[in-house]
Length: 448
Image (cartoon, rainbow, N blue to C red; front, side):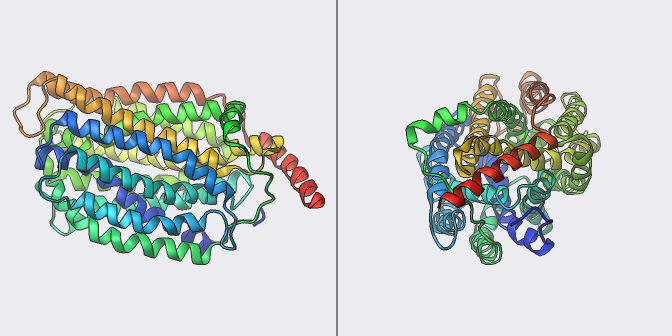
């Protein structure tokens, strides 16, 4: 595919797998920890430890899947075979995790979470690398990333809003939500993936010799823009992971409004969709990294008010959800578009298009951030004396919850802004990289 605008129908088809993948992500990050602690009675520390183990395993599998994806040779391409192969593992593990057997404990939670995360890596990592390879254009990459992330936000809306529409989980019961989503995902995941792989081309590229495993680390660390981006990505990931993990607990125990969980989530993610076109337009004026920084700064200003809220402050929190939600589009779309540009640094150096390997390391950063969020937030709450099974928590325990939910993320996002504000890859720099890559690949074709 050349640098012309991707047809709208192809954009939609490419982004479609993001919809059920996101509908899967919401229960994993928002409903699942609360379900296993509040309804199945597992201690908060045990839930946090089980999910931390699963996430650390997930981090280990990312570079393996990414590297093998880069090395795959088939008439169906490099990325599409992996996405299709992920489906059986995903469907089975979703069913077992969301509808657990009697007596399921921390070991059960860890085992099936590990299986699900492996399947998710096999789907999401090639999907992201595939999108990064559909175009070499600086701004078109943001548009392709935007199509995928709009599907992600729509999937999140479905997962957050469908239970409320059907009258399920309005009492704050995450188990009822998970029971509803399991069969829906078992159907939606295969349909979305098969539509995408049947209609979107898997771009043929001029490939160099596969890089030896021992050189992969040296290749990554030599890429300075990558190191800067991945650190900012990790820091911002922790900032996003904390409120995602603690949202249900905050609404239930600080706002004392469990019936508003679904509507508040819906307002947040719907605002995210509305914000995407604004951020894409701003990107053409400021560049992707500066637009992302502006979004994070606005988010900090809005979220800083959250620790001041208390019981029944639903309307102020709704306003915060809408305003921070408008920034969500930038947080989802722009980093992944910048990731594609950073891969160009390696490719221009003669390394070949190792998009899967690079996206694997970004996947590791994402998952490590979420692991740190859930693996530290729940134990800290337990130390503070917070009890998820009661509404009679002490003021200090509720303050700890509020500070973990909103105070800590502001600090992390300020750090991410500091890292990205002077990021060296703008549109002009990336255009120069594209010219160098073109020369290298023409030389390879001539040699072949």
